[in-house]
Image 1 (cartoon, rainbow, N blue to C red):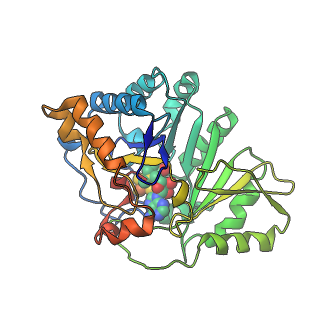
Image 2: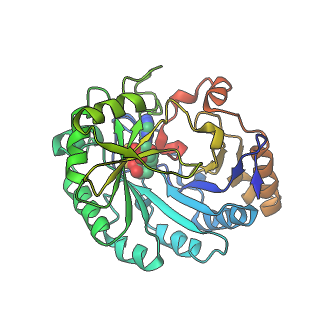
Amino acid sequence: MLVDNHNRTINYLRLAVTDRCNLRCNYCMPAEGINFVKNDKLLTIEELKQLAEILVRQGIDKIRITGGEPFVRKDLMVLLRYLTTLDGLKDISVTTNATLIGPYIDELKALGIKDINVSLDAIDKTTFERITRRDQYDTVHENLIRLISEGFNVRINFIVLEGQNEQDIIPILKVMQHYPVSVRFLEEMPFNGGSKSFQKIKWDYKAILEHIAESFPKYKKLEAPSTSTSINYQIEGHQSTFGLIPSFSRTFCGSCNRLRVTAIGDVITCLYGSPKVNLRDIIRGAEGEKGVEAAILKAIGTRAKTGFEAQEEHASVFDSSMTSIGG
Ligand code: SAM
Ligand code: SF4
């Protein structure tokens, strides 16, 4: 079991498989993209398999695949197939922009990988395409509906962006009320590759809830596991639920059970902190698996208590992009 220096059990790994993406969401990166790393700096599928295996042996029982866009990686299914064979790994999930997932839906279902988070920051096509800077709305919408109809456990991630998509908060809830999905509203974080900086946000989780309550006063709070980062609700008469994720307010650090490994193998123990160690160099070097195990234990033994504390130690954190951190 992995336990950090604040006595929090770490059982959840967010594993980024690439820093590349086919969209250019304006809250994530500049229009021209970021300096994507060279291919030889990315973990290979064999290395990703090896790291996952080590971490599961150490106590990770839940892995979310993220990126960049995971499905730009042509060999992604090789990794996913392998993960389903790991004893001790109870939960495999994927976060995706749903542009490229179409051809893989049948196999994901056959593998039993049912938890898919889809990023959809607008229900209006023009707004969506303005935010993502690409014309992929129809594909995303089609894949989203297909995932829901095929019985996947789908959660929509909607970042509330001042001046861009707040007018879609109520409409997306109205459209999704007929589907068994969770619409999760996230606070914007300043990880956009340096294109925009801010110290506070208008749309924090309280403001989002107040806004929703004006249109839907009848809602109830739902039970959630103590490690959940979202506060979940259901509106009376809706099949869907909705959630609020205080990703900028950081109210959930006390029960944080997460570890991140980026596409280049950096270990990140807090989104707001600096990378602790690089596992790619260790796994490619003489120390191999033993070195990786020791490096993970050391990183987990020196975690910041909160995202605010981590940020204090990492002055340049807001130059990063979520596509390289692995959101
Ligand atoms: N490309 C995939 C996607 O968009 O779902 C996976 C990677 S993306 C970096 C992971 C998550 O991070 C997405 O839900 C995305 O909306 C979120 N994200 C990216 N930039 C963010 C930011 N500046 N603030 C809050 N969330 C952000
Ligand atoms: Fe790509 Fe996801 Fe970042 Fe959008 S949020 S640019 S889809 S990595």
